[in-house]
Structures are given as C-alpha cells and as structure tokens.
Image 1 (tube, rainbow, N blue to C red):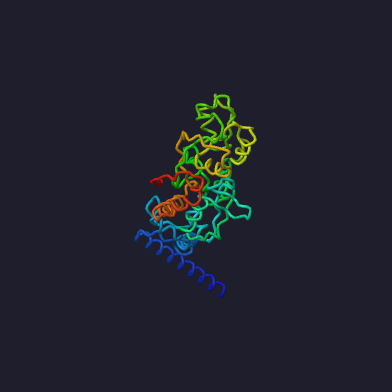
Image 2 (image 1 turned 135 degrees about the horizontal axis):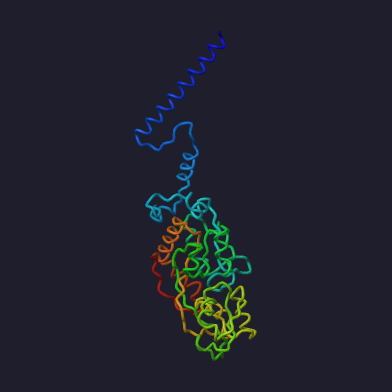
Length: 321
C-alpha cells in the first residue's frame, strides 16, 4: 500500500511540474517574449549581464553605438575590454628618431609614442599602464592578428591590401615618400635612380612602390629596419634610402651635415592606427580620440616637440572620415 501511494504521489508531482512548465511556455509564446524559460538555460542571461557590465568609457566617446546602432559594450571589442582592464599593449617602432625611438634608459619618445599615449588616455588607460611592443614593418599584421598588441601606431600606411587583414583608424598623419642621400649625392629624384643601389625595409609600402615603379632602374636592398638602411648609407653600401619624408627627416637630424632629403615626395602615405579586423567599436573609439587630439591642439603640439626639431615643416592635420 505504501509503495502504491508513493508511486501515485511521484506521478502527481511530475504531472504538476509538466503542466506548470507548459503554462509558462504558453504564456511566453503569447506575449512574444524571448525570455528563457526557467530551467532551460541561464548561460545567455549571464553572457548578456557580463557584456553589459563591461562597457568601456570610450564607448560613450565614440557615440555609444555600434555599426548596427546598438549600444557598444567592451565585451564586443578586444580593445575596449583590454582598456577596461586598465592596461594596453601598443605597437610602435623602436628605431625612428622623432617618431618612435627607444632611448638608452628604456623610455620612449616621438610623435607616434605621443599619439599612442593620447589614445590610451582617452580609453581610460594611464601612460604608465602602457606596454610598448616593437612592431617592425613586416611583422605588424601578424602581431595584430595574433592579439599580441591592442593597436599599432608605427608609421603604418593605410592600404587596401593591409585592410584585408586588419582595420585602421585615422589617418592621424599624411607623409610623402622621399629619398635620403649623402650630402654630395647627384640623385635628384626617383627618376635618377638608374643603376643605383637603393635601400628600404621589407614589408613597407616604400619598398613595394620601388618594386612596382622603379625596379628596372634601381637595385633594391631590403633590411628589417630603417636604421640599418641609414647605417648602410653611411658606409656607402647603398646610395639612397627611401621611405616617408617625416621618417627620413628624423634620421637626417641625427647626423647634421651628412645627409639630405631630395625633397621630391612621390606619394601620399596616410598613417593609420592598426587594430583587430572587425573591431568596429574599438575603431570608432580611436577615431574619436584622434579627432579630439587634433581639435584640442595636442596633435600640433606633439609634432612640434618631436618632429619639429628636425626642420620638418609641420603639415595641416588630416581629415578623418
């Protein structure tokens, strides 16, 4: 008897639970609600809560909207999530005077360094919480794709080929490809490179342009860094170095009276800040920071203090779309 009663009681409880669950489901369906039924899964609710709680201050700075018009949350952006944690890894060059140079004491100086710091500040990260990571030209896309840096500010020209792998904010500066030669050189421009040995950096747009336009006239020597190219120019191993004028101006200033810029810029190089492909929210936040840097005078002040001493003429600030 006791066994029969226990069995009947169990069946009644199961029946009542099934009826209650069906009623909740019917009510949810009638109201058109997407709220999960109790007991089904709580993971989506937890994920939504986590996303909401990780909103970055920079989301507001970027208008607080994603490409689809919804609210931006740090959880949808690696950059904003890392910024919220209070630390960022920023890729720069280590060997470009005036732009990004690692000094003997381990500190960093240059315009790209100042841009990287300003952006970080606008994302809520103090300069002391930035880790600067060397980002050579040929390594930049890989560093971003592997998540080894949050963003790269390293004389990084925006090109269609690169945009297939990474996203760009900016431009924050427009340079022009030029030639650095010895003071007594007879090279007057790219058209005078016939039979000359020219140096540039592997993976750079400068090297690619030479290959595309002047390969028949010049022998191109590619190194890993521009400082190596300049050293080869000093020793006479190469007869000219080509890259952007603002980079060459810094090297010329380091060796007064030894080198000169030809002064015939033959391209427009739009420098962008590279970041993870598809990080729309992060890109918007960086663009907002760049615009503010230009508007409040910090952009011009940074250029004057870092690149200005080389004699380089400070250009007009670029327009960011």
